Image 1 (tube, rainbow, N blue to C red):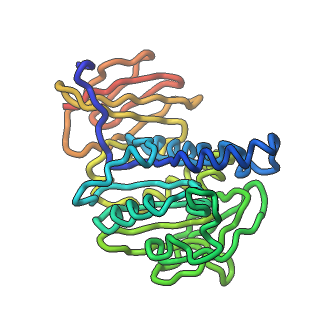
Image 2: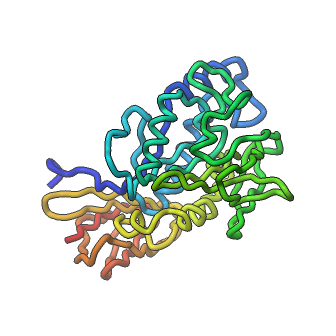
Image 3: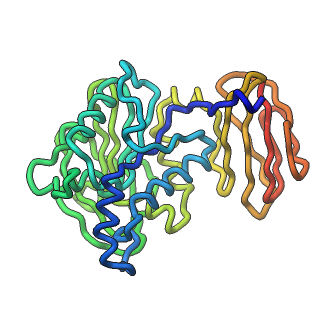
Length: 305
């Protein structure tokens, strides 16, 4: 079974960029004890992990890739999602890839200081913002606030920001978050796809505060129906619950881990109606249809056919 197993593609990718890592290391190496984690030399990686952990606790099988590993040669990206979380360095070539991705139906979700610099560490926001057409907005300023602070969205969800509060001005985008009369986030339609942009580092704030549920609630409200319908995932966010799903010749196999201190019941959404059975459980997990009960610190493997 496992010899031919492969991951079950969800269409969701959290992307990191080498140039951002190198730039942050160069800046952070001179300050080994920064006042905010956002100024740490691995802040970008920390932020992507915060986004990855949130999506995994929603049950999604998430790709984690460097931008050059992503396939930007397709004709249609409907049902595909890219997350760019606090990736501060973007080259003109990379921006072109992202414009092509969104114009062909992809969904781009961006937070933090993504695109603040180009690939030569030159501030991209000093002149015409190169992502303005794609984002439908441009940045005005970033103000240092505190370690964590609320970012209120127009749909009632309150995310957790870290360090900088980013202010923007929309052109073609629609505001999705405000602070008084100022805009903190936007949604823009570009070609056949869409871009969500919150320039405040909310994934980093989520990981620092461990308030994953609120970020998950927002993501659940904006992910497309196609992505949600076609994925193996939890019916609702599960704090300290994680799932990975693979495809095998005998069926699909989901690995579910309960890191909580209490027994949890997971309701699993599957792309179609399937029969379920326990393939392995180290503490006697039980399953009834799409509902599985897992003990604390237990790992269970569910076979779907």
